[in-house]
Image 1 (cartoon, helix red, strand yellow):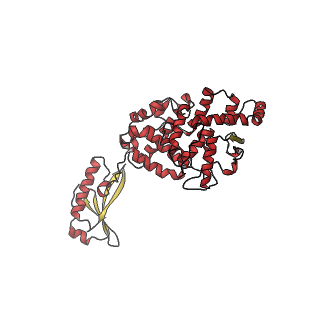
Image 2: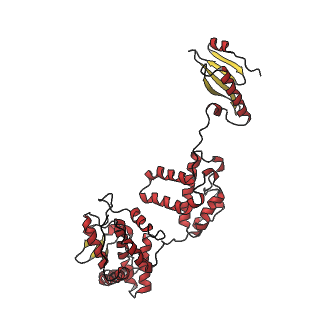
Image 3: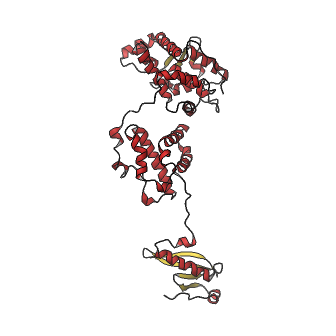
Length: 398
Protein backbone atom coordinates (compact mmCIF):
# COMPACT_ATOMS: atom_id res chain seq x y z
CA UNK A 1 0.00 0.00 0.00
CA UNK A 2 1.40 3.37 -1.01
CA UNK A 3 1.95 5.78 1.83
CA UNK A 4 2.73 9.48 2.15
CA UNK A 5 0.25 10.41 -0.57
CA UNK A 6 -0.45 13.87 0.84
CA UNK A 7 1.48 17.10 1.13
CA UNK A 8 0.81 20.39 2.87
CA UNK A 9 -0.24 22.13 -0.36
CA UNK A 10 -2.96 19.53 -0.89
CA UNK A 11 -4.00 19.66 2.74
CA UNK A 12 -4.34 23.46 2.85
CA UNK A 13 -6.60 23.54 -0.20
CA UNK A 14 -8.57 20.34 0.57
CA UNK A 15 -12.36 20.62 0.37
CA UNK A 16 -15.04 18.55 2.14
CA UNK A 17 -14.18 14.86 2.01
CA UNK A 18 -11.75 12.20 3.26
CA UNK A 19 -8.15 12.07 2.00
CA UNK A 20 -5.86 9.04 2.43
CA UNK A 21 -2.17 9.39 3.18
CA UNK A 22 -1.80 5.60 3.27
CA UNK A 23 -0.80 3.42 6.15
CA UNK A 24 -4.23 3.82 7.86
CA UNK A 25 -3.84 7.62 8.09
CA UNK A 26 -6.62 9.89 6.75
CA UNK A 27 -7.54 13.54 6.83
CA UNK A 28 -11.26 14.32 7.18
CA UNK A 29 -12.45 17.72 5.98
CA UNK A 30 -15.93 18.75 7.08
CA UNK A 31 -18.35 21.11 5.34
CA UNK A 32 -17.45 23.79 7.86
CA UNK A 33 -13.85 23.60 6.68
CA UNK A 34 -12.46 22.00 9.86
CA UNK A 35 -9.80 19.37 9.25
CA UNK A 36 -8.84 16.42 11.49
CA UNK A 37 -6.60 13.37 11.32
CA UNK A 38 -8.10 9.88 11.79
CA UNK A 39 -6.57 6.43 11.98
CA UNK A 40 -8.69 3.64 10.48
CA UNK A 41 -8.24 -0.05 11.22
CA UNK A 42 -10.37 -3.13 11.93
CA UNK A 43 -11.30 -4.58 15.29
CA UNK A 44 -12.77 -8.10 15.17
CA UNK A 45 -13.32 -7.61 11.45
CA UNK A 46 -15.27 -4.38 11.88
CA UNK A 47 -14.05 -0.90 10.80
CA UNK A 48 -12.84 1.26 13.69
CA UNK A 49 -11.70 4.87 13.66
CA UNK A 50 -9.49 6.74 16.11
CA UNK A 51 -9.35 10.54 16.19
CA UNK A 52 -5.77 11.85 16.15
CA UNK A 53 -6.19 15.60 16.43
CA UNK A 54 -6.84 18.63 14.23
CA UNK A 55 -4.82 19.85 11.25
CA UNK A 56 -2.73 22.03 11.16
CA UNK A 57 -2.39 21.95 14.97
CA UNK A 58 -1.00 18.48 14.40
CA UNK A 59 1.32 18.63 11.43
CA UNK A 60 1.48 16.10 8.63
CA UNK A 61 4.88 14.89 9.88
CA UNK A 62 3.57 14.38 13.43
CA UNK A 63 0.44 12.60 12.20
CA UNK A 64 2.60 10.22 10.13
CA UNK A 65 4.85 9.54 13.12
CA UNK A 66 1.84 8.72 15.31
CA UNK A 67 0.32 6.51 12.60
CA UNK A 68 3.56 4.54 12.34
CA UNK A 69 3.56 3.99 16.11
CA UNK A 70 -0.11 2.94 16.02
CA UNK A 71 0.61 0.30 13.36
CA UNK A 72 3.41 -1.03 15.56
CA UNK A 73 0.99 -1.28 18.48
CA UNK A 74 -1.44 -3.30 16.37
CA UNK A 75 1.35 -5.68 15.37
CA UNK A 76 2.25 -6.15 19.06
CA UNK A 77 -1.37 -6.78 20.06
CA UNK A 78 -1.71 -3.46 21.85
CA UNK A 79 -4.49 -0.87 21.63
CA UNK A 80 -3.36 1.77 19.06
CA UNK A 81 -5.56 4.38 20.78
CA UNK A 82 -3.02 4.40 23.62
CA UNK A 83 -0.57 6.20 21.30
CA UNK A 84 -2.90 9.21 21.31
CA UNK A 85 -4.37 8.80 24.81
CA UNK A 86 -2.08 6.80 27.12
CA UNK A 87 -3.96 4.46 29.49
CA UNK A 88 -4.55 5.72 33.00
CA UNK A 89 -2.12 3.89 35.24
CA UNK A 90 -3.72 3.16 38.58
CA UNK A 91 -1.78 4.44 41.54
CA UNK A 92 0.21 1.68 43.14
CA UNK A 93 -1.24 1.07 46.57
CA UNK A 94 -0.56 -1.61 49.11
CA UNK A 95 -3.34 -3.90 50.31
CA UNK A 96 -3.35 -2.02 53.62
CA UNK A 97 -3.78 1.36 51.92
CA UNK A 98 -6.51 0.00 49.67
CA UNK A 99 -8.30 -1.59 52.65
CA UNK A 100 -8.22 1.75 54.48
CA UNK A 101 -9.72 3.43 51.40
CA UNK A 102 -12.42 0.76 51.23
CA UNK A 103 -13.36 1.15 54.90
CA UNK A 104 -13.53 4.93 54.56
CA UNK A 105 -15.73 4.67 51.46
CA UNK A 106 -18.13 2.03 52.82
CA UNK A 107 -18.38 3.15 56.45
CA UNK A 108 -21.10 5.69 55.57
CA UNK A 109 -23.48 2.84 54.72
CA UNK A 110 -22.62 0.62 57.69
CA UNK A 111 -24.99 0.57 60.65
CA UNK A 112 -22.67 1.85 63.33
CA UNK A 113 -19.07 2.66 64.17
CA UNK A 114 -18.61 -0.79 65.71
CA UNK A 115 -18.80 -2.34 62.23
CA UNK A 116 -16.00 -0.06 61.04
CA UNK A 117 -13.95 -0.94 64.09
CA UNK A 118 -14.50 -4.68 63.56
CA UNK A 119 -13.34 -4.42 59.95
CA UNK A 120 -10.20 -2.53 60.93
CA UNK A 121 -9.40 -4.71 63.93
CA UNK A 122 -9.76 -8.03 62.08
CA UNK A 123 -7.54 -6.87 59.22
CA UNK A 124 -4.92 -5.53 61.62
CA UNK A 125 -4.85 -8.78 63.58
CA UNK A 126 -5.02 -11.39 60.85
CA UNK A 127 -4.33 -9.89 57.43
CA UNK A 128 -1.95 -6.93 57.39
CA UNK A 129 0.98 -8.84 58.93
CA UNK A 130 0.98 -11.18 55.91
CA UNK A 131 -0.19 -9.13 52.92
CA UNK A 132 -0.55 -5.56 54.18
CA UNK A 133 2.60 -4.34 52.40
CA UNK A 134 1.92 -6.15 49.13
CA UNK A 135 0.24 -4.50 46.16
CA UNK A 136 -2.93 -6.31 45.01
CA UNK A 137 -1.32 -7.58 41.81
CA UNK A 138 1.28 -9.47 43.86
CA UNK A 139 -1.15 -11.29 46.16
CA UNK A 140 -1.55 -14.99 45.38
CA UNK A 141 -3.68 -17.91 46.55
CA UNK A 142 -0.79 -18.96 48.76
CA UNK A 143 -0.85 -15.63 50.58
CA UNK A 144 -4.57 -15.97 51.26
CA UNK A 145 -4.16 -19.51 52.56
CA UNK A 146 -1.35 -18.35 54.85
CA UNK A 147 -3.77 -15.82 56.35
CA UNK A 148 -6.78 -18.13 56.68
CA UNK A 149 -5.42 -21.60 57.42
CA UNK A 150 -4.23 -20.90 61.01
CA UNK A 151 -7.72 -19.69 62.05
CA UNK A 152 -10.02 -21.56 59.68
CA UNK A 153 -10.85 -24.45 62.02
CA UNK A 154 -10.25 -22.74 65.38
CA UNK A 155 -11.95 -19.39 64.72
CA UNK A 156 -14.21 -20.33 61.85
CA UNK A 157 -16.71 -17.50 62.14
CA UNK A 158 -13.94 -14.93 62.42
CA UNK A 159 -11.99 -16.53 59.56
CA UNK A 160 -15.07 -16.45 57.33
CA UNK A 161 -15.53 -12.75 57.93
CA UNK A 162 -11.84 -12.11 57.34
CA UNK A 163 -12.05 -13.95 54.00
CA UNK A 164 -15.09 -11.91 52.96
CA UNK A 165 -13.30 -8.68 53.85
CA UNK A 166 -10.19 -9.62 51.89
CA UNK A 167 -12.39 -10.52 48.92
CA UNK A 168 -14.12 -7.13 49.08
CA UNK A 169 -10.80 -5.24 49.14
CA UNK A 170 -9.43 -7.33 46.27
CA UNK A 171 -12.62 -6.71 44.26
CA UNK A 172 -12.02 -3.02 44.80
CA UNK A 173 -8.48 -3.46 43.44
CA UNK A 174 -9.82 -5.23 40.33
CA UNK A 175 -12.43 -2.51 39.72
CA UNK A 176 -9.76 0.18 40.03
CA UNK A 177 -7.50 -1.79 37.66
CA UNK A 178 -4.89 -2.32 40.34
CA UNK A 179 -5.16 -6.03 39.60
CA UNK A 180 -5.91 -7.64 36.23
CA UNK A 181 -9.41 -9.11 36.14
CA UNK A 182 -8.09 -12.18 34.33
CA UNK A 183 -6.04 -13.07 37.43
CA UNK A 184 -9.23 -13.44 39.45
CA UNK A 185 -9.89 -12.70 43.10
CA UNK A 186 -7.67 -14.95 45.26
CA UNK A 187 -10.05 -14.63 48.23
CA UNK A 188 -13.19 -15.64 46.33
CA UNK A 189 -14.98 -18.66 47.81
CA UNK A 190 -17.16 -19.94 44.96
CA UNK A 191 -15.25 -22.01 42.40
CA UNK A 192 -12.00 -21.14 44.14
CA UNK A 193 -11.26 -21.40 47.88
CA UNK A 194 -14.16 -23.83 48.30
CA UNK A 195 -11.83 -26.37 46.64
CA UNK A 196 -8.97 -25.59 49.03
CA UNK A 197 -10.61 -25.17 52.45
CA UNK A 198 -13.32 -27.17 54.26
CA UNK A 199 -16.79 -25.65 54.18
CA UNK A 200 -17.35 -23.45 57.28
CA UNK A 201 -20.68 -25.13 58.03
CA UNK A 202 -18.94 -28.49 58.35
CA UNK A 203 -16.48 -27.26 60.98
CA UNK A 204 -18.43 -24.47 62.66
CA UNK A 205 -17.75 -24.36 66.35
CA UNK A 206 -18.98 -22.06 69.07
CA UNK A 207 -16.39 -19.35 69.62
CA UNK A 208 -16.20 -18.16 73.20
CA UNK A 209 -15.30 -14.62 74.08
CA UNK A 210 -11.72 -14.46 75.36
CA UNK A 211 -12.13 -14.39 79.15
CA UNK A 212 -9.71 -13.07 81.69
CA UNK A 213 -8.75 -15.36 84.58
CA UNK A 214 -10.71 -14.08 87.56
CA UNK A 215 -7.50 -13.93 89.58
CA UNK A 216 -6.15 -11.36 87.10
CA UNK A 217 -9.26 -9.21 87.01
CA UNK A 218 -8.42 -7.39 90.23
CA UNK A 219 -5.08 -6.26 88.74
CA UNK A 220 -6.85 -5.13 85.58
CA UNK A 221 -9.29 -3.06 87.64
CA UNK A 222 -6.36 -1.48 89.47
CA UNK A 223 -4.98 -0.38 86.11
CA UNK A 224 -8.39 0.90 85.02
CA UNK A 225 -8.66 3.03 88.16
CA UNK A 226 -5.63 4.99 86.93
CA UNK A 227 -7.48 5.85 83.69
CA UNK A 228 -9.68 8.90 84.12
CA UNK A 229 -12.40 8.33 81.53
CA UNK A 230 -16.05 7.35 81.24
CA UNK A 231 -15.01 4.17 79.42
CA UNK A 232 -12.83 3.15 82.37
CA UNK A 233 -15.57 3.67 84.96
CA UNK A 234 -18.05 1.81 82.77
CA UNK A 235 -15.68 -1.17 82.54
CA UNK A 236 -15.22 -1.21 86.31
CA UNK A 237 -19.00 -1.07 86.73
CA UNK A 238 -19.49 -3.96 84.27
CA UNK A 239 -16.90 -6.08 86.06
CA UNK A 240 -18.39 -5.51 89.51
CA UNK A 241 -22.04 -6.02 88.50
CA UNK A 242 -21.41 -8.82 85.94
CA UNK A 243 -23.93 -7.26 83.54
CA UNK A 244 -23.66 -7.09 79.77
CA UNK A 245 -21.95 -4.11 78.17
CA UNK A 246 -25.12 -2.70 76.57
CA UNK A 247 -27.02 -2.94 79.85
CA UNK A 248 -24.38 -0.90 81.64
CA UNK A 249 -23.80 1.64 78.90
CA UNK A 250 -27.51 2.31 78.52
CA UNK A 251 -28.15 2.77 82.27
CA UNK A 252 -30.06 5.91 83.24
CA UNK A 253 -30.40 7.37 86.71
CA UNK A 254 -34.15 6.72 86.92
CA UNK A 255 -33.42 2.97 86.94
CA UNK A 256 -31.59 3.19 90.29
CA UNK A 257 -32.85 3.07 93.85
CA UNK A 258 -29.70 4.26 95.59
CA UNK A 259 -31.40 4.23 99.00
CA UNK A 260 -32.04 0.50 98.76
CA UNK A 261 -28.91 -0.10 96.67
CA UNK A 262 -30.64 -1.71 93.71
CA UNK A 263 -30.69 -1.17 89.98
CA UNK A 264 -33.68 -2.38 87.97
CA UNK A 265 -32.92 -2.86 84.30
CA UNK A 266 -36.18 -2.68 82.31
CA UNK A 267 -37.25 -5.63 80.17
CA UNK A 268 -36.77 -3.58 76.99
CA UNK A 269 -33.03 -3.48 77.61
CA UNK A 270 -32.58 -7.11 78.67
CA UNK A 271 -31.60 -10.01 76.43
CA UNK A 272 -34.31 -12.23 77.94
CA UNK A 273 -36.88 -9.42 77.68
CA UNK A 274 -37.51 -9.56 81.43
CA UNK A 275 -36.68 -6.89 84.03
CA UNK A 276 -33.59 -7.64 86.08
CA UNK A 277 -32.75 -6.35 89.56
CA UNK A 278 -29.06 -5.91 90.34
CA UNK A 279 -28.00 -5.50 94.01
CA UNK A 280 -25.30 -2.86 94.29
CA UNK A 281 -22.14 -3.54 96.29
CA UNK A 282 -20.09 -0.87 98.07
CA UNK A 283 -17.55 -0.34 95.24
CA UNK A 284 -20.39 -0.08 92.71
CA UNK A 285 -22.12 2.53 94.89
CA UNK A 286 -18.84 4.47 95.02
CA UNK A 287 -18.70 4.57 91.22
CA UNK A 288 -22.32 5.71 90.99
CA UNK A 289 -21.85 8.51 93.54
CA UNK A 290 -18.84 9.65 91.56
CA UNK A 291 -20.67 9.56 88.20
CA UNK A 292 -23.53 11.63 89.61
CA UNK A 293 -21.16 14.60 89.57
CA UNK A 294 -21.23 14.58 85.75
CA UNK A 295 -24.92 15.52 85.69
CA UNK A 296 -26.07 13.58 82.62
CA UNK A 297 -29.20 11.45 82.17
CA UNK A 298 -27.10 8.42 81.34
CA UNK A 299 -24.83 7.18 84.08
CA UNK A 300 -22.07 6.65 81.52
CA UNK A 301 -22.65 9.35 78.94
CA UNK A 302 -20.64 9.86 75.78
CA UNK A 303 -17.81 12.35 76.30
CA UNK A 304 -18.61 13.96 72.93
CA UNK A 305 -22.42 13.56 72.86
CA UNK A 306 -23.61 13.97 76.48
CA UNK A 307 -27.22 13.10 75.65
CA UNK A 308 -26.17 9.67 74.42
CA UNK A 309 -24.60 6.72 76.27
CA UNK A 310 -20.90 6.04 75.90
CA UNK A 311 -20.30 4.00 72.76
CA UNK A 312 -19.35 0.34 72.62
CA UNK A 313 -16.20 1.32 70.73
CA UNK A 314 -15.12 3.74 73.45
CA UNK A 315 -15.40 1.03 76.08
CA UNK A 316 -13.64 -1.59 73.93
CA UNK A 317 -10.78 0.77 73.09
CA UNK A 318 -10.33 1.58 76.76
CA UNK A 319 -10.03 -2.11 77.61
CA UNK A 320 -7.78 -3.01 74.68
CA UNK A 321 -5.30 -0.28 75.47
CA UNK A 322 -4.60 -2.28 78.64
CA UNK A 323 -5.54 -5.85 77.69
CA UNK A 324 -5.98 -6.34 73.90
CA UNK A 325 -6.49 -10.09 74.41
CA UNK A 326 -9.67 -9.74 76.50
CA UNK A 327 -13.22 -8.83 75.50
CA UNK A 328 -15.72 -6.94 77.62
CA UNK A 329 -17.91 -10.03 77.72
CA UNK A 330 -14.88 -12.00 78.84
CA UNK A 331 -14.76 -9.88 82.00
CA UNK A 332 -18.33 -10.97 82.76
CA UNK A 333 -17.26 -14.58 82.23
CA UNK A 334 -14.61 -14.17 84.92
CA UNK A 335 -17.42 -13.67 87.45
CA UNK A 336 -19.02 -16.96 86.44
CA UNK A 337 -15.70 -18.82 86.77
CA UNK A 338 -15.05 -17.29 90.19
CA UNK A 339 -18.48 -18.36 91.41
CA UNK A 340 -17.83 -21.95 90.35
CA UNK A 341 -14.25 -22.19 91.56
CA UNK A 342 -14.13 -20.03 94.67
CA UNK A 343 -17.60 -19.93 96.24
CA UNK A 344 -20.35 -22.21 97.52
CA UNK A 345 -23.25 -20.08 96.34
CA UNK A 346 -26.05 -22.18 94.80
CA UNK A 347 -26.19 -22.44 91.04
CA UNK A 348 -29.56 -20.68 90.94
CA UNK A 349 -28.14 -17.65 92.75
CA UNK A 350 -25.31 -17.40 90.26
CA UNK A 351 -27.56 -17.92 87.24
CA UNK A 352 -30.00 -15.24 88.36
CA UNK A 353 -27.14 -12.86 89.09
CA UNK A 354 -26.14 -13.29 85.45
CA UNK A 355 -29.77 -12.82 84.33
CA UNK A 356 -29.82 -16.33 82.89
CA UNK A 357 -33.12 -18.13 82.56
CA UNK A 358 -34.00 -20.83 85.09
CA UNK A 359 -35.09 -23.91 83.14
CA UNK A 360 -37.83 -24.97 85.58
CA UNK A 361 -40.62 -22.36 85.42
CA UNK A 362 -41.87 -23.15 88.93
CA UNK A 363 -38.39 -22.70 90.34
CA UNK A 364 -37.99 -19.48 88.34
CA UNK A 365 -41.08 -17.93 89.94
CA UNK A 366 -39.89 -18.95 93.41
CA UNK A 367 -36.33 -17.76 92.97
CA UNK A 368 -37.34 -14.43 91.45
CA UNK A 369 -38.94 -13.35 94.74
CA UNK A 370 -36.59 -15.15 97.13
CA UNK A 371 -33.05 -14.64 95.97
CA UNK A 372 -32.41 -10.89 95.98
CA UNK A 373 -30.68 -10.85 99.38
CA UNK A 374 -28.71 -13.99 98.55
CA UNK A 375 -27.62 -12.36 95.32
CA UNK A 376 -26.70 -9.24 97.28
CA UNK A 377 -24.41 -11.34 99.46
CA UNK A 378 -22.82 -12.81 96.33
CA UNK A 379 -22.21 -9.42 94.72
CA UNK A 380 -20.81 -8.02 97.98
CA UNK A 381 -18.37 -10.93 98.14
CA UNK A 382 -17.43 -10.35 94.51
CA UNK A 383 -16.78 -6.67 95.23
CA UNK A 384 -14.51 -7.51 98.15
CA UNK A 385 -12.67 -10.06 96.00
CA UNK A 386 -12.02 -7.47 93.31
CA UNK A 387 -11.17 -4.31 95.24
CA UNK A 388 -10.85 -5.32 98.89
CA UNK A 389 -12.95 -4.36 101.87
CA UNK A 390 -12.25 -0.65 101.47
CA UNK A 391 -13.19 1.33 98.38
CA UNK A 392 -10.36 3.36 96.88
CA UNK A 393 -10.98 7.03 96.08
CA UNK A 394 -11.99 7.63 92.49
CA UNK A 395 -10.45 10.20 90.20
CA UNK A 396 -12.09 12.94 88.17
CA UNK A 397 -14.12 11.86 85.14
CA UNK A 398 -12.85 13.22 81.82
